[in-house]
Image 1 (cartoon, rainbow, N blue to C red):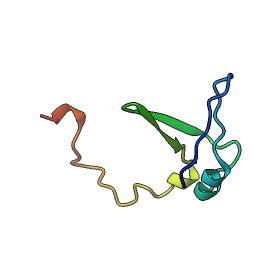
Image 2: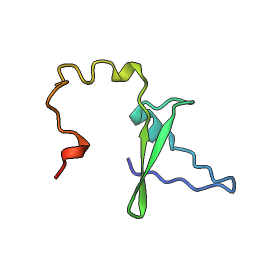
Image 3: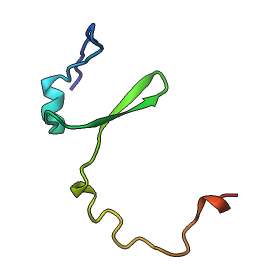
Length: 70
């Protein structure tokens, strides 16, 4: 699914239709840009509902804290 886009004079890029449809991205969806070397990783921000149950069964005691990393 290689596709290209051009940065407009208003610094906007339109995501090609083939990419939007393949990823099921909708208008108004929020994204995060993560710098990666000379490029950028574009990821949709998950909704609160999509995160429900993500940590089910996670330990709440005896976890490694930032204070004891070394």
